[in-house]
Structures are given as structure tokens and as C-alpha cells.
Length: 216
Image (cartoon, rainbow, N blue to C red):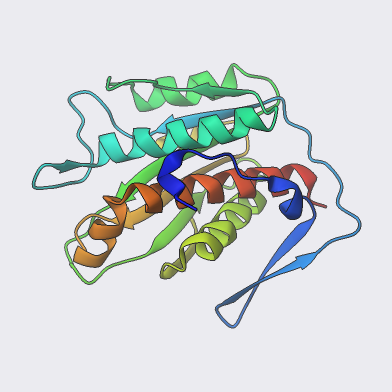
């Protein structure tokens, strides 16, 4: 199946899966006692925008890739009847403070920020998810999305990490920031520029959110 064709996945199989990371091997098992963590809306945040290009490599701009992934996640979540709100729906600058305020204004929301990484070392590669301890459910959400991302992409696992990023530290909702690939790494950049890879990332984010809603 072509992931760039925007076909909506049937998520029923993933309704009760439990992600377990054991010895760096991702295993999905069925959970018979999933309980819902209710939320009313998913705030999808495409990193950077406008004059803020984010990470760059030549004419490859993080801001464009992040928005593309967010739009794909938005499509999938809406197909599952999950309400969404985008902090930006086009190429415009939105301050970090405003992004956090958008989430805080939505009672019962969760917040997922999409980024593409860069580093001084061109050897750095893989996916990592960040959270802040302000909300007790952020860590769980981070693990769900990180695990689903590894499952869908088989990318290098850089783990789940605490961070004081403003969009997380000023956020009262369960909030995570996903770094989808390193634009400074040739292999990661090749994948990031592939619409199929971005589709897989979008599916993974949606899977993680759905699992979070149904988790113990």
C-alpha cells in the first residue's frame, strides 16, 4: 500500500495493543483490560513556521516537513472521530508562548508537537520523544508515541527524555514533543524527504494517541 496516497488505516487492530520495549526490541501484545484516559481534543503543533525555519539542510526546512506530518495526523485522527486543533495550519510564525496558551485554553486536551532534528554530528540519527513532568500523563503519552514510531519506521531509538522546552514546561496538558528524524544525517534526511516515511510517522502518532486514550 502506498502511504503517500493518504489512505485511512483501520485502527481496530491497534485498539487494545500494549507496547513493551524490552532489550531494545519493540513488541506489541494485546491488553484485555484497557481503560480510557479521556480527552476532548488533540492539539497538533507543527514546529517553527514563517521566518523561523527550524532545522535546515540546504533547501530542506524543518518547518515544512513538520507541517506536512501534522496535516497527515490531523486527517487520520478526524477519520477516527477524534477532535483536533492545529496551532498553525499554514506557514506562519507562532510564538512558543502562544502555542502553550492554545493548549491550556482547551480543557481536557492533549498536546503533540512535531519536529525534525539537527545536530553538529552528522552521525546522530533516529527518533526521540520529549516530555515535561508538569503533567503526570505526559510520560505515558511520550512512551506510547515513541513506541509506535519505532514500530512503524524501524528507526534508531533515541529514547524518551525529560526536557524544559517552553511548549512543554508552560503546558498544563499532557504534552510531548516528537523529533522525527535528523536532517543533518544523510540517511535520516533521505527518509524525512520521502512522503511514505512521513505518512508512517503520522500513523505512528495517531496510533500512540489512540493507545493513550485506551491505556490503563
